Image (cartoon, rainbow, N blue to C red; front, side):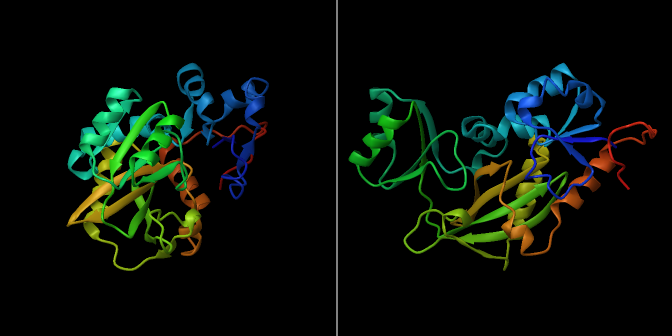
Length: 269
């Protein structure tokens, strides 16, 4: 199995992967063509790799397409599990739509930037002044009800199964539960229904590498988003070796291939 990586950090412990700088994509096209799997390409490379060179990529194409943009992701959730989404409106930023938002949502509510992660690009809107400030910075209005929670779950999915799950509990006076924003981790009492929901939705959307953010409120479970390039602190605390799991998954997905003794790629045992 021949592996090419475009993300040195994410594949640091996958010694079998040959790293290529993303900007050398066209210079290294022959090596890329020879590879069985391309690991962690940048988004601008994905369509060329899959549709142009017919390469297998990890994460897969649906994970990239849905995970790249909160709008696409949210609409996919609304399609397959609308009962598991907080009330959300996604609208172009016009004066009419601004007034519509103010009519439909009670303060406080959540306003998000379309492309953000790790808890950044999320505003708690408590009055009209804060809302107008958010509108001044964004072309798209992504507005979501604020759930009555002080924690959420990060449920990590790889291949076709859940590999880790834990609570992220918000720091003092914070509406963000992300570890990067001061939240802390607890592995206790993860609801089995939340795990089953993530497994069902990941399979429905053909997601094979993601950290799903799920909240529990009033007896129901709600998706916020999933992250393709998720943090691994919660995995490291449990000694979960992501690199080994990725290799095992790729090997299961790859038919037996003859070994080329002249190949520049290292062998995968």
